[in-house]
Image (cartoon, rainbow, N blue to C red; front, side, top):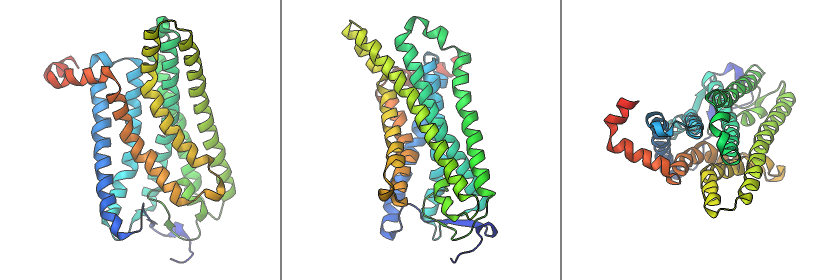
Length: 315
């Protein structure tokens, strides 16, 4: 593939996760199992919260949307990646590449601010338990969910439109397993500097602002917990936040590792490894964390499993 105008070509070529032929089969099997677990775990969480009336609280409202985002994030990437393992040439059309990029950016930004909304919910539950039901009203919950969706959709469309309305020149080979905005920037011969600066500024704002909400919320939670005289109260508070805090640490640690590493250590290979983590591993772990560490979810599962017809009638 020589240098040429990629806008005249019908497709891009994705190099995928690995170029070693002997690893194609094992990696395909592992990723297929992971995706099945993602589908079962996140769909199961969405259905369980929707069906069981005892889980219709603000906390589980946010967990349901987090499961939807994780499911969408992995589904945008994984099926195409699995198909490419079986093909001799890993190609993606121009329109499919733009669509994949737009949805991926939307879901990843939505997850950042959804975790922030969940941190605020935990702050209200622990620091103002008597006013929790009043403060976390249905209207506020919908606002805290709706704003991230609208904001992430606007940002993903803006970035995707700016990239795909620019002029491409160079190779049409993407050193990634999906269409990532950073991976496509080297191919641009117009507006490249402007888009690089825009992506850096927006990424930094999204990461820092959402993380700041999480840190402030948990700082106030810790202050409230340390003021509690009852050990039982402290244990209950920590168990309430445990699942969400685990998810936050894993997710933000992955993103910070990707964006804060020095340029000398930065490479597309490390980006691919990190991308596998937050597009596949984290969506697989999240429903497991919220189910294995949560007695209410376990009890709801047993209720639905034992009396499925009764739950369906109630629903």
